[in-house]
Length: 117
Image: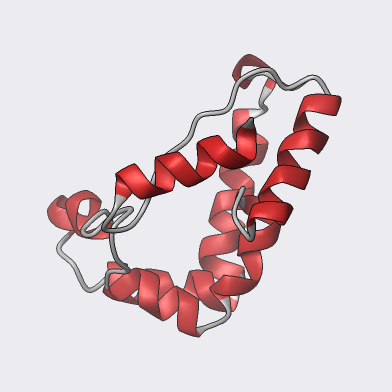
Protein backbone atom coordinates (compact mmCIF):
# COMPACT_ATOMS: atom_id res chain seq x y z
CA UNK A 1 0.00 0.00 0.00
CA UNK A 2 1.31 3.43 -0.94
CA UNK A 3 1.12 6.10 1.70
CA UNK A 4 1.61 9.81 1.21
CA UNK A 5 4.91 9.56 3.05
CA UNK A 6 6.28 7.16 0.44
CA UNK A 7 5.60 9.43 -2.53
CA UNK A 8 8.75 10.71 -4.22
CA UNK A 9 7.98 14.43 -4.34
CA UNK A 10 10.64 15.17 -6.97
CA UNK A 11 9.17 12.52 -9.28
CA UNK A 12 5.65 13.80 -8.64
CA UNK A 13 6.74 17.38 -9.40
CA UNK A 14 8.44 16.16 -12.57
CA UNK A 15 5.26 14.42 -13.69
CA UNK A 16 3.17 17.51 -12.97
CA UNK A 17 5.62 19.72 -14.84
CA UNK A 18 5.60 17.30 -17.77
CA UNK A 19 1.79 17.39 -17.87
CA UNK A 20 1.86 21.18 -17.90
CA UNK A 21 4.37 21.50 -20.71
CA UNK A 22 4.29 18.34 -22.81
CA UNK A 23 0.68 17.26 -23.10
CA UNK A 24 -1.83 19.16 -25.19
CA UNK A 25 -4.21 19.56 -22.22
CA UNK A 26 -1.37 20.83 -20.04
CA UNK A 27 -0.21 23.29 -22.68
CA UNK A 28 -3.75 24.57 -23.19
CA UNK A 29 -4.33 24.90 -19.45
CA UNK A 30 -1.08 26.77 -18.88
CA UNK A 31 -1.75 29.14 -21.80
CA UNK A 32 -4.86 30.32 -19.97
CA UNK A 33 -3.25 30.29 -16.53
CA UNK A 34 -0.27 32.32 -17.71
CA UNK A 35 -2.58 35.14 -18.88
CA UNK A 36 -3.52 35.69 -15.22
CA UNK A 37 -1.21 37.90 -13.15
CA UNK A 38 1.11 35.64 -11.15
CA UNK A 39 -0.11 36.86 -7.76
CA UNK A 40 -3.69 35.91 -8.70
CA UNK A 41 -3.09 32.55 -10.42
CA UNK A 42 -3.79 30.28 -7.47
CA UNK A 43 -7.27 31.71 -6.99
CA UNK A 44 -7.95 31.89 -10.73
CA UNK A 45 -6.99 28.26 -11.28
CA UNK A 46 -9.44 27.17 -8.57
CA UNK A 47 -12.36 29.34 -9.67
CA UNK A 48 -15.41 27.06 -9.97
CA UNK A 49 -13.42 24.16 -8.49
CA UNK A 50 -15.60 21.05 -8.06
CA UNK A 51 -18.66 22.90 -9.37
CA UNK A 52 -17.91 23.90 -12.95
CA UNK A 53 -15.06 24.10 -15.44
CA UNK A 54 -13.25 27.42 -15.42
CA UNK A 55 -11.60 28.77 -18.58
CA UNK A 56 -8.34 26.89 -17.97
CA UNK A 57 -10.18 23.64 -17.19
CA UNK A 58 -12.26 24.01 -20.35
CA UNK A 59 -9.14 24.59 -22.46
CA UNK A 60 -7.54 21.44 -21.04
CA UNK A 61 -10.76 19.45 -21.55
CA UNK A 62 -11.12 20.64 -25.15
CA UNK A 63 -7.50 19.64 -25.81
CA UNK A 64 -8.12 16.05 -24.76
CA UNK A 65 -7.84 16.26 -20.98
CA UNK A 66 -10.97 14.13 -20.70
CA UNK A 67 -8.83 11.14 -21.70
CA UNK A 68 -7.08 11.34 -18.31
CA UNK A 69 -10.24 10.85 -16.25
CA UNK A 70 -10.43 7.07 -16.23
CA UNK A 71 -6.82 6.59 -15.16
CA UNK A 72 -6.66 9.40 -12.61
CA UNK A 73 -10.06 9.57 -10.95
CA UNK A 74 -12.58 7.36 -9.25
CA UNK A 75 -15.43 8.29 -11.55
CA UNK A 76 -17.73 6.60 -14.02
CA UNK A 77 -20.90 4.57 -13.90
CA UNK A 78 -21.97 2.97 -10.64
CA UNK A 79 -20.58 -0.34 -11.88
CA UNK A 80 -17.24 1.23 -12.87
CA UNK A 81 -16.82 3.04 -9.56
CA UNK A 82 -17.80 -0.09 -7.63
CA UNK A 83 -15.25 -2.14 -9.54
CA UNK A 84 -12.51 0.44 -8.91
CA UNK A 85 -13.37 0.53 -5.20
CA UNK A 86 -13.24 -3.26 -5.03
CA UNK A 87 -9.84 -3.27 -6.73
CA UNK A 88 -8.54 -0.67 -4.29
CA UNK A 89 -9.85 -2.65 -1.31
CA UNK A 90 -8.27 -5.83 -2.67
CA UNK A 91 -4.93 -4.04 -2.89
CA UNK A 92 -5.10 -2.96 0.76
CA UNK A 93 -6.63 0.50 0.58
CA UNK A 94 -8.73 1.09 3.69
CA UNK A 95 -9.70 4.75 3.31
CA UNK A 96 -11.03 6.90 0.48
CA UNK A 97 -11.14 10.69 0.47
CA UNK A 98 -14.27 11.66 -1.43
CA UNK A 99 -14.82 15.12 -2.90
CA UNK A 100 -18.35 15.55 -4.23
CA UNK A 101 -18.44 17.76 -7.29
CA UNK A 102 -21.17 19.61 -9.11
CA UNK A 103 -24.20 21.57 -8.07
CA UNK A 104 -25.74 18.84 -5.87
CA UNK A 105 -23.12 17.48 -3.44
CA UNK A 106 -25.73 15.74 -1.28
CA UNK A 107 -26.89 13.66 -4.25
CA UNK A 108 -23.28 12.84 -5.13
CA UNK A 109 -22.57 11.71 -1.56
CA UNK A 110 -25.67 9.50 -1.56
CA UNK A 111 -24.78 7.94 -4.91
CA UNK A 112 -21.21 7.26 -3.80
CA UNK A 113 -22.42 5.70 -0.56
CA UNK A 114 -24.75 3.37 -2.49
CA UNK A 115 -21.83 2.14 -4.62
CA UNK A 116 -19.30 1.98 -1.77
CA UNK A 117 -21.44 -0.23 0.48
